Amino acid sequence: MALDTGATAWMLMSASLVLLMTIPALALFYGGMSRSTSVLNMMMMSFGATGVIGVLYVLYGWSMSYGGTDIGGIVADPVSQAGLHGTMLDGSGRFVLDDYGVPVIVGVAFQMTFAVITVALISGAVADRTRFGAWMTFVPLWVTLAYFPMAHMVWGGGALSAHGWFGSIAAPIDFAGGTVVHVNAGVAGFFLAVAVGRRRGFGTRPMRPHNLPMTMTGAGLLWIGWFGFNAGSAFTADGNAGLAWVNTTAATCAAMLGWLLVERLRDGRATSLGAASGVVAGLVGITPAAGSVTPVGALVLGALVGALCACAVGLKYRLGYDDSLDVVGVHLVGGLAGTVLVGLLAKDTGLLYGHGPAQLVVQVLVAAVAVVVSLVMTALCWVVVDRIGPGWRLSADAEHMGADKAEHSESAYESLTAGRLATVLPRRDHAPAPSPTTKEA
Image (cartoon, rainbow, N blue to C red; front, side):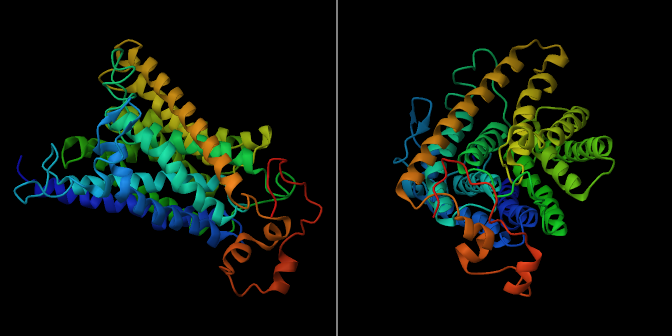
């Protein structure tokens, strides 16, 4: 196999685009949705996750996901390519190439960025009330116990791949991360939101995004970065990449319109936050299906996912869990919906194309396994962090002050002096106490 410089250039660009999805895109998207006293803390969670995972991926993350001998279909040997041994030069001094003529080290760069964005997504579920130290302890545990195994199980030839548990029924389809990224992160976000407890004043005081232009800018950058995420998952610059690009755009446009329609019918108006959230919902929903549906199928999928997620984000008020920035309503619901809809809309194997229920059955089974794995591993990580550290939850005083001042001794808006903050922000002295599971400072 000769070096394909065109494919290599495309994959390097795709890796850069996916990194853009975390820094600055997700940091801006989440930062704008947070309260003004927690915006830096929220953005720091994305930056902190990037730093930790960039180190771990080089040390053993790649090996544990893709590089080593399969261990029970769950993980690859984390030692065999530790430190990226064997991913660079061969015996003749040339770079090792993959099946597309792209150096394996470029594939490492691409896959590293997926690990980064997956973990960073979780942070939105516990915004405004979480200790930065607890988050930075959680990140290495979760990426090791939940993300690396799931990546191997789905994409690395493990139990949820075409050669795994359900391959005899139909080959599971997850083009770019419906289960590995969005279901995985969404389940983790749900567990942490419940375990950390609700923000003081949740459900009784308005907790609106403090900077919607920032959020919309972040959503736009996420959309751009997602072309690397989805089209890059073709692993070369070919027609499949083009199909994934078009499907990504079509589904996202339809999802945004679907979300806005729900808002208009339910609330009497369409909002900028709804447009930004609909964009992300569409991107999430098309992720597992980008290479397997037609552009018309992508429109159908996007519209359904956008409307479904618009309805799902309100569940937190009915069920009483505080998913601060709608990780559950967008990423878990959107990831599950997109994964399952592949079984209906895949052009070569989908039920609606006359190919029988096999693909649908497999997609449901794979999604169910992803939910269970993520739930168990997140619970384990929660227990470890809660036992070894000072606890997840900010104290009542720290939460009132804001995570930026309490955790980082900084403020995003220095013009708001302490005196002005006292008049702008409501007191929380008599707010409901946090969940009994919460450890106070």
